[in-house]
Image 1 (cartoon, rainbow, N blue to C red):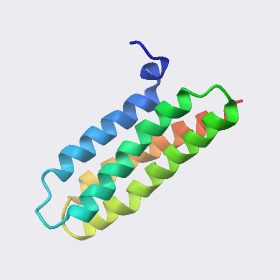
Image 2: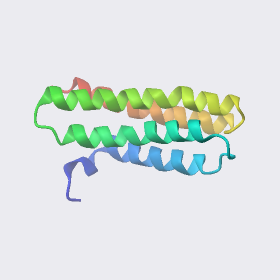
Image 3: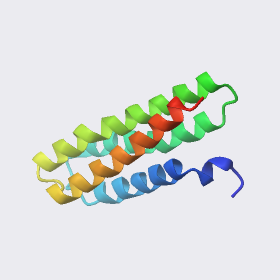
Length: 115
């Protein structure tokens, strides 16, 4: 591992979450481009902002990127709920993904509050 961020559990969980989200949306029927695109971008944004924040020297800059990553995790929650209500994903899968987002969000809150 060349970068320290690759050792962060939250970074690895965020990458895993994106891979799961991407694989899930590949199975969506055509005509759902808007929700697929938004979900994939929000899911990808989590790990990208963790990476960018980790590359910053100043605490306030790092915290800002971790806040953006946390916001992207929160953005995924209503998308998952909408997908469930439209029958694109099963309730059990939706709940499992939301629980993973909750873990990621809590881990990001820890990074944000770290002094």
